[in-house]
Image (cartoon, rainbow, N blue to C red; front, top):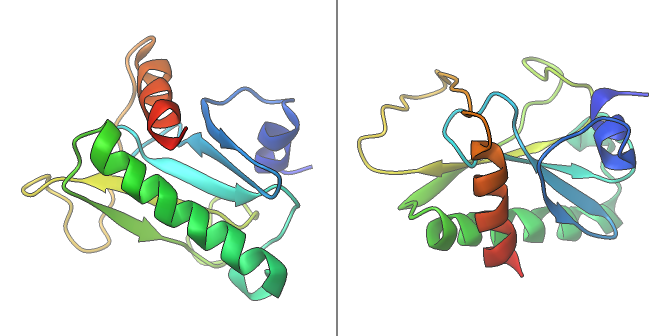
Length: 134
């Protein structure tokens, strides 16, 4: 079972921000910026090319909702939404990155610097996003 399937099943702990019938969202453990959320289909699917048509709308409307929540909950000016397929896909389970952005945040092209949460900080960001998504 892959890491993301273990997170979805609750076997591996993660800061869950969204838990719905077909999609689960959780904070990236190594975020580009704090609040960086990964959205995964609850069912194991390797890549976008394998995504069944009935899951396309739930996955991408969830990405849209999370991007909207980030502007409200995290005072982000915008978001970066991305997905890798095979190349640079660190976990072989389809996942959509939704990253909060602000002007001058230093993100350039596809260079993704990573940061870390301080103790308790992931829970704070998760709570803010959950409240905005509610």
